Amino acid sequence: MEKFFWGNSTSSMQTEGGWNEDGKSKSVYDIRTATESSSDWKVANDNYHNLSEDLDLMKDLGLNMYRFQVSWSRVMHDGDGNLNSKGLEFYDQLVQGLLDRGIEPMICLYHFDMPLKLANEGGFLNKKVVDDFIRFGKIIIDHFKDKVKYWITFNEQNLYFQPGATHYAVGIDLGRKETIEDIYQISHNIMYAHACLANYLHDTSNNKIGGMLAYAATYPSTCNPSDQLLVARFNEFVNNSLLDAFVRGSYSPAVISFVKRYHLHLDIEKDELAEIKKMKSDFIAFSYYRTDVIDASKVPVDCAPNYYLKYGKTRNKYTRSNYWDWNIDPQGFRKVMDDIYYRYRVPVFPIENGIGLLEHWDGLHQIDDQLRIDYMREHINELKKAQKEDGVEVLGYLGWGLIDILSSSGNMDKRYGVVYVNRSNHDLKDMKRIPKKSFYWLQNVIKTDAKFI
Image (cartoon, rainbow, N blue to C red; front, side, top):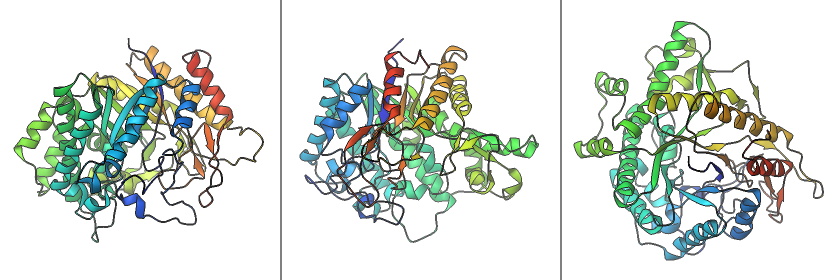
């Protein structure tokens, strides 16, 4: 069996900073402004200027994998222009720095930060932009394929098949209401782009690539058959249809039937379906933070399954939650791994997991984040059970943002790291890195391969 990967995951805009340096062009995040409860995105945790220190912290922690994003707008002028050699040099330094420290790099090609020029052209609703992304992806694959063995294309790809898809696929307000056809067209366009790059990687190297979902196990609120049915249909549309494409090369029959019955007008070409048909996945990657519950009585009778959670989501009375009402469900983590592996028999790879907590450093004492330790312990234990008791092939466990980064909403107060970064939403302070109590706990977990927990 291959070595187990203990690692860290990040995105470029939540981590790097250096938003206007060395020829980087603008992304949609560069024009977002700070609010009362969030920062702008210009500095993040300034990994761009603290690269060696951050890599040394990861090595000291014992990590042997780092999943990061190559920023499209940093390495390609406006996303569709010339290659920016200075931007590419940053990732050369990052990859070599990882390898020098014995840390396996994993590249993600897109994590929602659409180049601003391409957003104004409609983002992934526009097939020209899809082609631009494929060009970008092939350039990055060609450049790094001899040093980087593990790849993903799109972060949390099923988010493009739910309400708010245009937020992730475009990143700016298009000035019109999102339609169900938008959601289905975006999802297909992105699956086609993923297939093209997965096939290209397999054709040109022995490297590994897989699809990635944001996976929250979804439960029925009661044993009412309507609750059970809606959860099954939601899972089939939002998760299984994409997994079917990743592994089997075709969408779920339920999704195909829905498109036909409701006469959705989609631009889907035969050569695009052929590219998807050719695709295979070496693993299925996913993020996992919490679980959801659906109450069928809240869902309109004519609602598309993609919207079930929007209308039917209800609170889980059996689980605890953090300050932001994200519930804590370690057994759901095990359920997700079981569900994926039993249906597809492809190795599973949780590449994001963690809990956001309110934390403040007094400038002197170690931060006691016992709640984070408890969260990680419970989830790692369930992962080990999935491996040892359920027979699931799990490639590793990557935490999310183990050096504090901006949250997905830009809130620096919502901290995921085992290393504190000394800044707030509106005060950059000194950006000092300070290991928390959880850093040393996780260090021991990795050193013993989780035997002591």
